[in-house]
Length: 225
Image (spheres, helix red, strand yellow):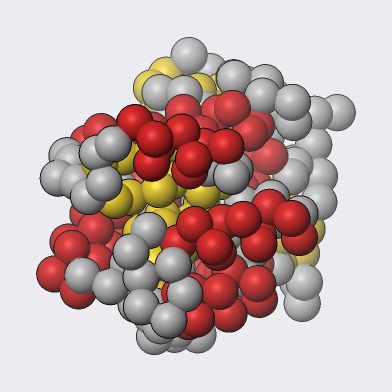
């Protein structure tokens, strides 16, 4: 999941970014409304975490403009405003959820997962199955041939990406964009390393192998047939 944080309180941004990345999310940040608008308009984010009281352009104005323009990203408003009218206005303008500060990271992560399940329920089943591999998209757990397999948050994100697009080639660039934010330094073989680790867990000792290489193109999860 790719997340954009638009928040001008830098200590909060640092804490959120670190905590969300440890949960396996790819995170980008913007510190004012103008910068946030440019990133939201030019990037593909699953969720935008939006503060209301921003310099240059306030969060409600951004939210209203995005929804009029048809922006599909989920928007979670993060604000110190506790009034009911503020919450109602934010939700009426198109926010998917509303969290008042201070809040616990665990609650935010739980709400993000609810949003993703809500968005995916029309695209995929709650249990993704590829041959004898099962991915529980709610619990973020993985089994193959009935055996539980531990994967890290980023390994899960990669496996989920491949399984959701099974039968289709996923390029290294697409994987990088899914797992990391644009400010993280890219190395030539980091995606290959993740694939190798995932293959050891998912394919070693099982038949058939599910994660296939398409030389010069990328990787593909074996289809159902």
